[in-house]
Image 1 (cartoon, rainbow, N blue to C red):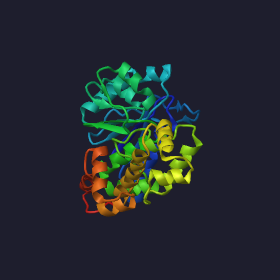
Image 2 (image 1 turned 90 degrees about the vertical axis):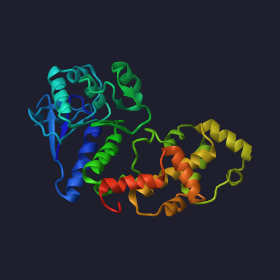
Image 3 (image 1 turned 60 degrees about the vertical axis):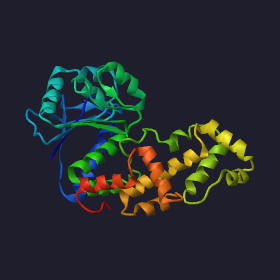
Image 4 (image 1 turned 45 degrees about the vertical axis):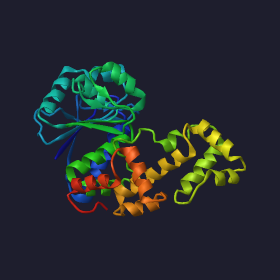
Length: 325
């Protein structure tokens, strides 16, 4: 399968290199599954970080319908916007889209797809700081906030930076099976693989964006003791404050309750175990610190809208095998 990386001026290096490395690793691990091509509107472009990229191929005149085109994200400058609106590039993207080719916009790559009219009536996303700009520029697009990536037919868009790796792993899973995606994630040391519906900034990090040393310490204790019984009373005793004061300070600092924060940490651990092991749902619940399998299933369903086994079954169907380890 041919994979074309569209590299435009002011490209962000990680928006390009993350997906490239993921594709490269699956080729290294399982034989050459994907033929990589680096294409552009010019033979040489400068990245936003200053590194110049040369010997880029021109936009191919013909492309196989089973190909994948990944539009790498770039800094939104006047120059990059002008390039995205280049009639030659617009016509080329429209042509490959009409052939049914899979198109993936990494971060601001969504803006390039939008200039070609490909976001009209489609669900999409981008970096969380650029969501409103994407809505304003392409009012006919359905811009989805708080998503790592969005899939709408043969059109894919992702948040920025490392989210391009998550989307690429998802594409590898679709195209070559979940086993190869999991092997690639391990090789990349991406153990906490994120799913499409996960928020761009996880609660674990977003809720640490405060200045309370006490609450940072409490959060560290919670993260280190997921499988231990935790009560507000014990935490309060450990940190020599009243339970009521601790609860009030925790919510004021993080925006969520201690119970909600702990549940989110445990769901994050469970997501990793479901994706990377063959542990039973019962064992996943136990390893993640849930008191019972039922409480785990209920929390998972509330968060993701499906059951833990439903997610694993989907992985197996994608892989065409009976395990994903």
